[in-house]
Length: 180
Image 1: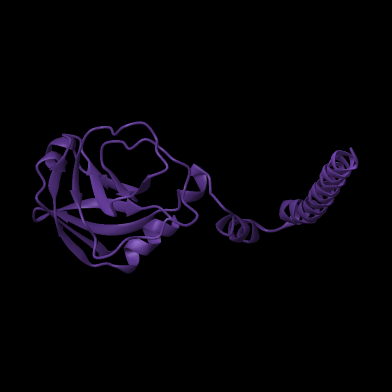
Image 2: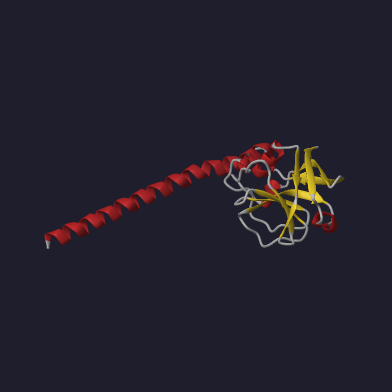
């Protein structure tokens, strides 16, 4: 009987210690967050953007600062932009790139960049639309959508957009992407 009582007390004490630790951690985290929230509301827009870029996951509006790029599809220039996500900036660091494209599932043309891109601080998932340049993280390939893609997925990062019609994109064999 004393062994059972000792075991029950040990479990009770352990549970109490864990609850105390959890309470202490939650009190500390809310105290740490309060000043940063207050300072963010009084900071300049540039400081707010800096804080956003350091956050774990920017919203769709945070990836809207476009970077113009030059894209040539089968020898024909088209207008295009990259968003300001870390993966898009990583792609820009590889430019210029010329890639051979192949069809995938009747929705996109795909190619493999020279290396995998960063997926840190990925934007919120969004479903791809016609003309979107995307990165499929598990396979490490780029995709140019010529039909609307599947539903939003954390594995598919939208990097930018090409201003070309679906017919041109659907038969594209070669793409060159350069810094504008």
